[in-house]
Image (cartoon, rainbow, N blue to C red; front, side):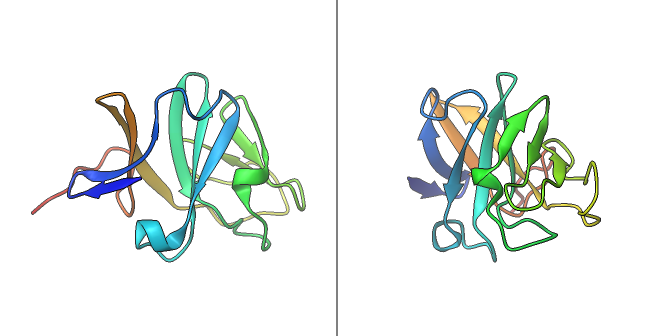
Amino acid sequence: MSTTSTGIRVAAVGDIEESEALKVPAGTTGHGDAIAVFHDGGAYYALDDTCSHGQASLSEGWIEDGEVECPLHSARFCLKSGEPQCMPATLAQRTHRVEVRDGGIWLHPGLGPGEEATG
């Protein structure tokens, strides 16, 4: 993984299989939680890794139809918005911007999917 002002290169395109996820440690991202980068429907998404309902890793969950299901209590979250799709979760997961560039998958911790870095 490499870090630049334009994000963190977390993988090469093809490294994260369809319906799989990569857990990027908090120490790498500088974010308060590890971040899970998901590959679903040919696109990449990123959410805080720790489920908002319980202490479970969403990167270990089931990914299907634009959602990830928590492996602990089966709460589901929308990969695009982070919004919970069913109980027991009621709080959204924080989303992060993911970009495919130069054959790599780049993560922008703290930026929402449509946000650009400033400064």
